[in-house]
Length: 73
Picture 1 (cartoon, rainbow, N blue to C red):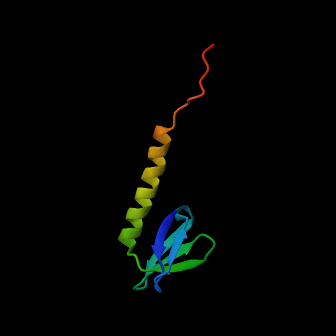
Picture 2 (cartoon, helix red, strand yellow):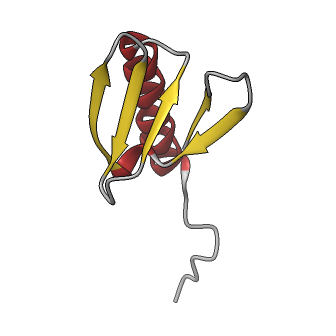
Picture 3 (cartoon, helix red, strand yellow):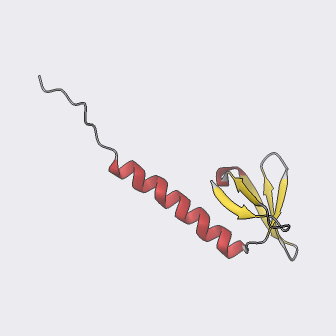
């Protein structure tokens, strides 16, 4: 999930896995897979950094999961 800022200053949280495209119009317009869109203050570069950081966190969580209920027979 990405926390971004609408043009009027209110925060919005979107699912980055549902982004279809990002346009620069000159604001940043995020088009979702259901064709809804959000116009936000953040630049495309900043949004891309946030997406990369989000996916890196998911990968790190997967690496730290261990099985603690292992029973030896």
